[in-house]
Length: 167
Ligand code: AR6
Image (tube, rainbow, N blue to C red; front, side, top):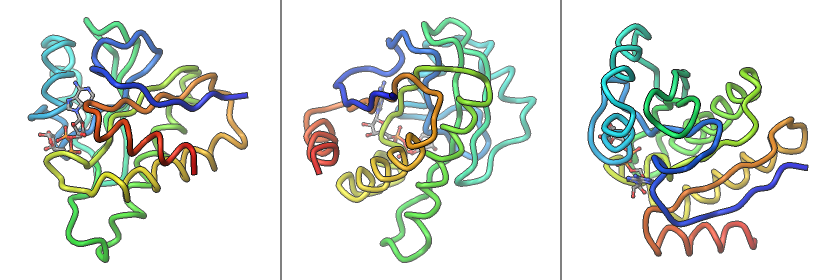
């Protein structure tokens, strides 16, 4: 039985098998959680990312964790919010599905997600939480993962996750 929970904190500090990065399509780092992950992992991470040839929106790619406590990083590119009728929900769901599938493929048992697309990319947190929780729960019906953690960087996001998990 896979546990699904929400915690408040900094994803770069978590001792899980894999953390997910809300990356840019070039996978070469940026601001927000992406910047924090690259700073904490050190230069080995961007060096490996340079070999990956970028990543499409809704897709995911895996690297080592370098100096992070996590063993690996899954880099996924969320959609930019353009009002909600440009396929944003399908693309965001694809980020969660592809990331969970990669974790399973690499036999990683514990995975932590940030609120993909909810910073610079402008996705409304309540709607993003609905997509995240629904997609993760669908995946968990047939999963070898032990634990999925939704990481909130502030109280507003934590409350949204708690509402989503209770619903
Ligand atoms: N731990 C957990 N969550 C965090 C952390 C952290 N250390 N830092 C920020 N967040 P964003 P996006 C939360 O903007 O919207 C980058 O420049 C933050 O509060 O990081 O998918 C990339 O290179 C927010 O809720 O990602 C891309 O260009 C969430 O992480 C672009 O931004 C996601 O915010 C991706 O934008």
